[in-house]
Length: 273
Ligand code: HPA
Image (cartoon, rainbow, N blue to C red):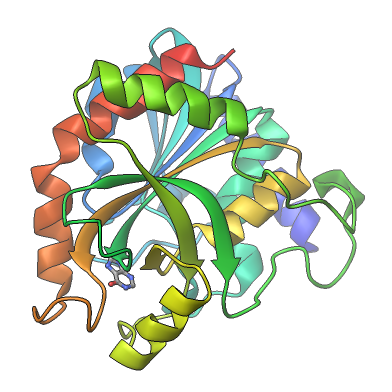
């Protein structure tokens, strides 16, 4: 079966289970899965039931698609995602985005936990992603050209939608959350970075670092889906502070700020036109 056929098979499976079409996709990062409690009229589909879907293997990551309504918008929420470091080919990493794209979403919210490189940040900050650095250079549009997903060559200027970023400023203000924005650097992981790597990333313009999001954003832009990205700064990156990095700290911090996170994302979803 070709990759396109695999995506279509998953789309057909999902279409049979839902009675509406999602307009907004949301990918929830580590420790941020509780947003789904806000979703009404839920139809939950486990990844393990969808043909062709891998099962998310990371602790703190569930593996479900939740379809329903958030602030009166039809949404498709991915509670748990596929990471490159789990060993999947990049086509599998972005499978959920391809599926949501063919289901017809026009906007995607992509969230993650990230290490803070910008020294003005502190753990618990919520950073709006204004641009990214694809450090490994892995690209989901690489390989066979599949016109159903969009053009071979596509622009990555304003990949993170400027209008949604403007709306985010208001959402932060309304919810009393200090506004932060910055450049997200994608590293493959799963080891955290070395202090020397973080110094390099800082020099080339990164404000935060993480192990996800960039492949999904590239796939979404190829499909002409508008992107809003947000990182929960769960820890300071290696060498920025003296604390030893741990997945436990990542999950604890994202849990601590999940209420603000949920409020902002829900507010923004309500604002999407
Ligand atoms: N580095 C990479 N990924 C991460 C980090 C980090 O410091 N924190 C959370 N995800």
